[in-house]
Image 1: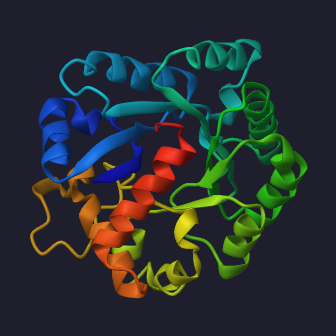
Image 2: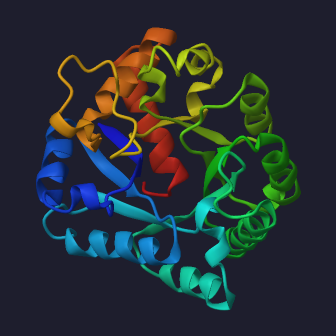
Length: 265
């Protein structure tokens, strides 16, 4: 069994074959997917996908509801109320994707911080775990998280690709770490390869971030280079190369961690 904690299933690249994508995931042993909400509208979309496929793939699809830092400029008075309303849906299991991204600044740092703190306050109020994004902003993100951590039930930094200092900062806050196919990239991912052994087994989760970050360890990558949840075993295998556990042990423990984190047990 595997659980993919980050899938962008509402992405247009899945428009033509979502049922087939889900069936291939199930056939590959990926039994549960957490669909990522990156804006108010995308959060509504992923919740709708959970509803749409509930009968065909029972117990497989769950969702987050949140505003990605790129979309922080869209925050208005209604945004948080709409996210809060979405959390009444049985499929919604976390608030996010939220956080800071100072790499490209599609929204200003001030806008990002405002949206981030508004969502942290919502997660604290509802006692839902938080699904975090961070890029080139670890120092500031950790400062904000330290203020809120005692009020949050749980937090995961998804698609972690940062420094040793950032990793230990998140672990010091008793957070989970999500690892993607970035670890399979022998050019960009060497730093991460050297860090995955430092993540406590009880704090590790895995994800594809599909359709992005296709594992470069695949000998025959699909045409179009689209990633999908069925390829999650490649991520687990690469992590296992860097650690003492087998791929099977990692699959079991990361699944147990994900069930606990998202309250799916």
